[in-house]
Length: 464
Image (cartoon, rainbow, N blue to C red; front, side):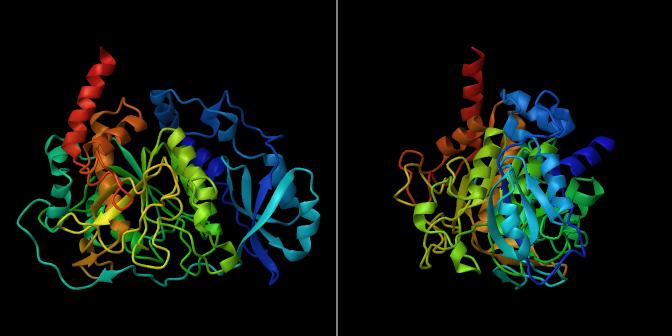
């Protein structure tokens, strides 16, 4: 417990100072020039990374580098002494989300240890009990006479039930979920086993700087259910035995670039905890402040902070599963951030017949790599009603991604000694369009038993 507390304090840096607000204050990203004056060392990573995180890296031969070091505490102290509140920092991007008054900006820009300062959000109030529901059809759904209930068709389309029958249900694996809120996950019966067996081991709200995540949005509730729900005969998710961390990064009161930095901070927190697989059913390209909008040329996998972080997380041994986006029949049409990073596993949505859902976003012809990467069921997916003890239905790549994420976790459980790149390669090789990937469904619908056999052969060849 003491080690976890140390990590929580040193990695999150959630030191939002309540009360220091003025009408001229706004949120900015402060980019530091270096990490001089820091108290942490590469030779002692146990001071800022959990044992599980270090074990994951060691298993794949991944070294801890200076980029993994926390930002300079000397720089943070200097900002605090100037009366500036820090919400969190990023080790990988070497910066901090800071609440700054307009009158302080010019002086800060002259500060020798600061590289740049970027406006990322106006000052918003704290999250209230308001709820944002995402494409939910609240009609009742009847139970099916099978273990998975209404989720039967979805898991069988991916041949994921075969993994479960072999005993791979996510045990000893750790999944992190980055979302907009998890309303009533602590109350509704679909998640009883999650609490009974203490599988929900960490929560944090990066929008308010607290640990309260069972609020604001039912979107995360739906996403979590596709993996963690366990009510046999009614609804069983794709990784019902995994351990989970739920992190709230999405701002339901408006769309601003700060959400991307929330996302990065949460991803680094997941890394520090030792999370194996991350699901993020979020995407960015259009904001409430139009000056922040992305243009297609910027979706190159590296221009946005979230996309860069997705690649850095993969380089540290995690698998990052993201939704491809729901703009396929809108003016934008394409995937968004962070699905554009080549190392993020972007998932498109298909209907029950395996055909592309009309809302599922396309990949860009202008990038050299295939996007999206895979496809999974995303239309009329059964999810809990967060306010009544019944099932509803939801549609979107937001549901396709976690269905895949849960099974990715189960597949990796079967081959824990193999690095993340081997797991991803197996999924693409197993998929329905492996020989002719396209910009609509990528490599297609994965077959998890084919991927399992592919990895068996791969494991055998590596041992010879």
